Image 1 (cartoon, rainbow, N blue to C red):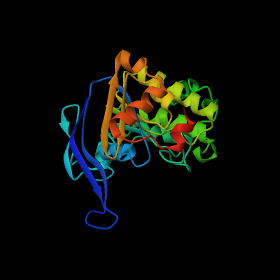
Image 2: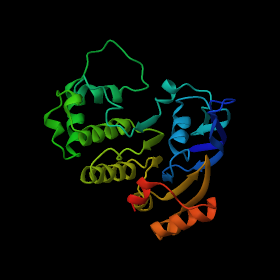
Image 3: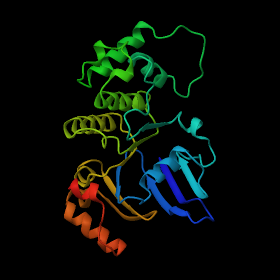
Image 4: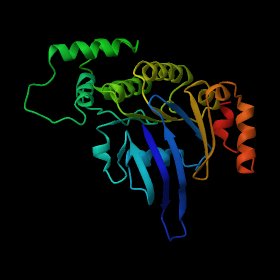
Length: 265
C-alpha cells in the first residue's frame, strides 16, 4: 500500500541552520499494516509523515501509494486518499461549523461538489450512528459548533472524520499527546478498533513506548533521519520498553535521551 524509496529532506540547505531531516528513508507497508513510529526529538518522525502527506516536496526519492507515484502530487490532491489526525486537537476540524457539517465535509473529501441540497436525512442518520460509537454523546449535539467541544471530543471527531471515507493510508501524528491519560486511552482504543474494523493501513507516531509496543503489528524506530530498527510479528509482541532502549543504544551508539518518552515508559 505504501512504498517509500530513499526519500531525502534537508531544511535551510546551504545555511548555518541546515538540518538534514530525512537521510534516504526506505520502507514498504503492506495493505492492513499498522505501524507505530518512535524516536527522540528531531529523529524525523513528523517530517516523515509530512513528506507522505505532501506538506512540502522531498529533495530526492519516491513515494508510492497503492501503486501510484505521488511524489510530485500536491497536498490537496493527496487529501483525497489520505486520512490524517494531528497532535493538536484544534487542527483537522472547522471550529465555527457544526459537528454534522464537519462530517459532511469529510464525507465529500476528494469528490466533485454539486449544487445538490446539503445534508439529507439518511446521511444524518449515518452520522448519528457513527458518533454513537464514540460514547461521548455527540450524536445528540450534531448542530453544536466544534469549537465548543473538549480536546478529547474534538480529537475523537477528527479520527472519525479521517476514516469516514476509508483512506488508503491513515497518518496519526502523536494524536493523543495533548490529551489527559484517560481521554488518550479512549482515543487510542477507538483508533485500534477503527483500524482493525476497516482493515486500514496506518502509520502512528507516538512518544509512548508502551503504546508503540501494544498497538499495531509493526514498530519502527527513527534516529537522525534514518530508520534504525524495524520489528514485526511475534518479535514485536514480546518486546519490552527496556528492549527498545537497548536497541536504540545498540543501533545509534548513544543513550536514549528524550524526557517525554522516558516518562512514558
